[in-house]
Length: 336
Ligand code: FES
Image 1 (cartoon, helix red, strand yellow):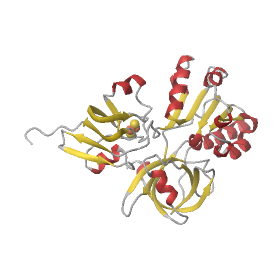
Image 2 (spheres, rainbow, N blue to C red):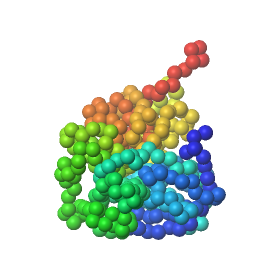
Image 3 (cartoon, rainbow, N blue to C red):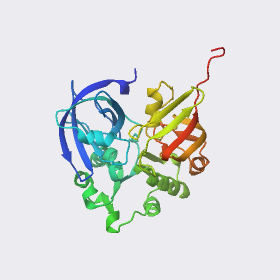
Image 4 (cartoon, rainbow, N blue to C red):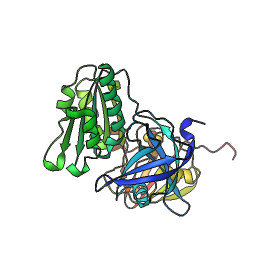
């Protein structure tokens, strides 16, 4: 069993509204917390009904230290239902959580780092900023600065903690106040060995990746995590047909395609569950109605436009009565 498959029961110790749309949950696991690296996330089984839960990943905020795990959840009315269910929780609720894991690791040998966060994407970068600032203060062998982007002043969550940690190495950009993020200029200001860590919506990631490549920077020096769940359209229910399995499934608005396939016993490989690794990609045979709302950051723009595959963990169909026909890796046994 992988360490990240280990499950715990945790109590929701405290709930704090950080902004009109972001709520912080302090979780106290029975038996104490496990340590986590900056950039780690927690798998949470979010109760969405009497006996039903959905799996969601939330970044751990800050460095470990006081016997609790902190996550922050943005309320997404058009999302898949996980955030709405989290917001219905009350202090004292009991939750199943999985051990911290990370797909977004900080390179502790980096000598210059820019952290770029947009919206709720700030959550994994708080711990990174704290770790890098502590290293800079202790050893002076890393330069770090951060740019935090939000729609409004009120949505600059954790900016107070970050300002305490980074001082004038933190810059905020409030887009609703007419301020703009100049990604090309931020990249141009970096030394050749600098690393860029980005977390934010998929559209921002696409811009950063293309600016990074256009500047001739090595791909390995750009590290990112995205919340690849915010598509072009609000989540809607749709139908999926799997001719190889003889199955037709309804995917509710509050479920991912991957969850629906797994519930029906259809095996699909998956790892990140946030549209980054591409492991859950399934072949699209046809779209009978509606359009594919690609919500991943794995496929290129050309691959998305071709529409031959989609990432089942985040992407879905939009349009009324939308229906997609998928192939899967399943092949019936000969003679069965
Ligand atoms: S599981 Fe990684 S992209 Fe879907």
